[in-house]
Each structure stands twice: as structure tokens, then as C-alpha cells.
Length: 337
Image 1: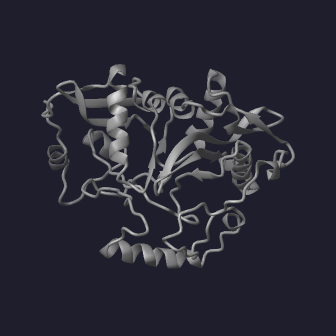
Image 2: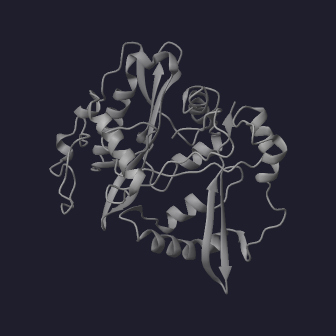
Image 3: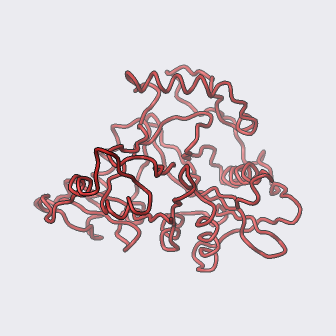
């Protein structure tokens, strides 16, 4: 995920297009093909040792099966991968405040930032607990690397189990997230070791596919996600350098352009309650069926991912005659300047 550069003007919306290989049209298709051809020239030394397709690999679109299908748990490496001298593996217990604090401090100073190194996502302890304690999560998949002499957390990677539907096939996968290495240790190539170790632990649970996102082009994307920025407190965003003005966009014009109505014009919209779980699950899964790649939500998943938690996750439903007709859900993720 990439954050908007402070050089972007307010009237430019940062977006990543949601695309699958068979859905490209016009300019999007031209741009992606051009980018892909450039990437073919890159030598992905680490990724080409992993069980993923190469950038220029082509597949028969009628084939609907795993990339590698003859995996066996007994063939999976039983020992942890070796770390550089002075470093040790640890399991971060997401239910313990001290462990969450260690993860928070690592991410706050070393995780995703914008191109100018000005803004960085600020994941709260409560957010991390929500994001990493999904139903049936595996404690052993919250992997840390500590510096032995100080016991300081300097690396982290996590995964949670997820049921995915791929071309109507339901597959148990792992969703990998929060790969982070302390800035001072980037030259030690800890990230590839973290990736191999999380892969090993996932494979030991007889799970052979994983899904993850990246802000860079890696072998080989199956989809991209589109997201938008909607400025709310325009004056503050301009003052901190997140957005900027130009000759055509003055401060007063920007404030007027992005002003939000004082009253809500959507009828029957209210905060989600626990009684809505069944209706929300039915609505959500029915909607997702139209896509070739989507998550499948159990009632437990819906309860975890959508039940409102202050300053973490918010879900609103549109109810008509006792039936859930629509929903809006978003999470709260501040940025640190």
C-alpha cells in the first residue's frame, strides 16, 4: 500500500485500479502491459526461488488448479530458518499488551510511509489486536525477530487463516500482513528469511496458498486494489503538507469544494448491532459471489470483522422492514507525521 505524496494536489485522487487479467480495457490495459514488460527485465532473485509464477509465465485460462499441487506436510522443513548471529526468533502474543506494544513501536517507526518519508500509518494497539486475532488465528503465525542482547523486536511478519473462493473453488489460505524490518537492519536481508519462515509455518498446517498485498510489483499479481482519498479536514491536511494548493485551488475554494453536509441524507442508516450478523453475512456473501476471487465470511468472521469497535472499525447498515439491505464499513487508521 502506498500513501499519497505531499506533492499531490487536492483535486488529484490517488487510486489503484482493481483489475484482473481478463478485465483490462483501453488505457489501463496499455499501461499495465507496458509496466509488465519492464518488470520482466528485473531479476527477482528471491521471488524466483519461491513457489510463485514468474512475471512472464503464461497459463491456459481453462486450467483451474493450484500452481503446485503435490505438497505434503511430511516434506516441509521442521527446523526454523537460521538467523544472523545475535538474532533470535520469537512468537508475539497478540493478547498481551507488552507484545502488542513491541509490535506497535516497530511499525510506528519502520512500516509503510509515503514517497517523501513524511507520513506513516500509525497502527494502535487496539487495531493490531483486531487485525491479528481473527477467528481460529494461529498464535505461531505472529513471528518476531529480536536482538538477543537487548530483547528488542527488530522484525515482524504475521498471517491469519482465511477462506477464499477462487473460480468457485473454496480454498483455505493464509493472509500475510505486517512484514516489517527495522530500518537499520535492511542490509541484513531479514525480510526474505521472515517470508520463508512464515511460509514454513503455514505449510505445517497443510495450507499451501497465501494471499498478500504489496505497494511494489512482485511476481505475479492476480489482482490490484483501487482506493481513493476523500479529504475531510482540508485546512489541516494542507497545513501538515499532506495536500497542497495551486494557482487554481485556493484555501477557501478547497474548503468549499470538500465541504461535507451537516445532515445525513441516507434513510434508515444506523450503527451495526450483534443482531444484524446473520443478515449481514447473507448480504455480504451473496454480493461477493459475482467475483472470481473473494473471501468467504462465516458468522464468526462477520462478528469479528464488522462489529463496531471505537477508533478501530465502524459498520453501518441500512435496514428496511427488519431486513438488512445494504452496509457501509470502514476502519480507522491514523497517520503519523
